[in-house]
Length: 302
Image (cartoon, rainbow, N blue to C red; front, side):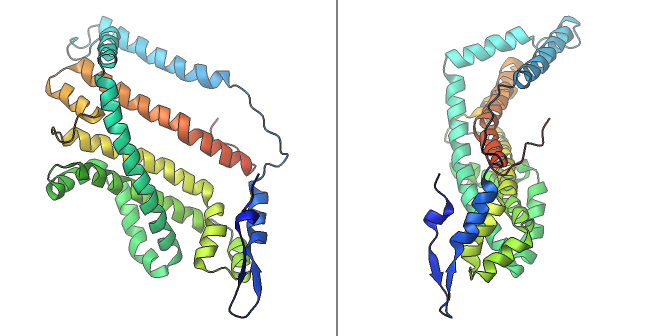
């Protein structure tokens, strides 16, 4: 497996001494390596059956509530009627179109958020003046509900597609930046001092030492950033509806609400949840397990 030694080169400082950052990067690679070099792949049956049991239990409770006539069926439709509506949305293509509209917007906004959040986090973590100015603001923005940005973006961008991406960026960037800042802050001082002694400048120190060391916390920030991006996207699509924006999952939810069509409302909620679960299981979980395993750590989940 290629290591950082292959990409690192020797640097010559102003005093004429050669600095080999590859040695330091090699140490980080050694930290990345699994302790015994063995990988165990076991199929976790309980991990599959437990969520299914919870879902089945919730559906049964839902059905019992319908049988008990706690609410009229036009307010709380039966699971069968929602399943029928969802199947109709899928077979007629409405669901796929809404998923595509929302997912491609979410991906574009999230990728832009990664670039902006990473650069901002790196700068704030390394420049004292920026840290004093931006850190409280980033924390405050992270706690602000995403839907609060929608009226602001509606006025600024007049209902165009830019308002969707603006809300996604405002919701996601603070989490990514804070994740990187937190990871850099938790880096052992010895690594930072070793990089400085070897002559690394700020950029080289960040690239070769701090970013690899901060990777687990940075990854947590990315997961949180995606969560905020997805929720921000749904909030924007739910409030800002127009022919120019198309119909995403949030628009589908809004249309069902305006028509008092509860099966469509619940179908849209199910689709939103499914997309979130698929992204979590297919993208972030494998990356997180790989990073933790390479560092000799295990997931904190049971």
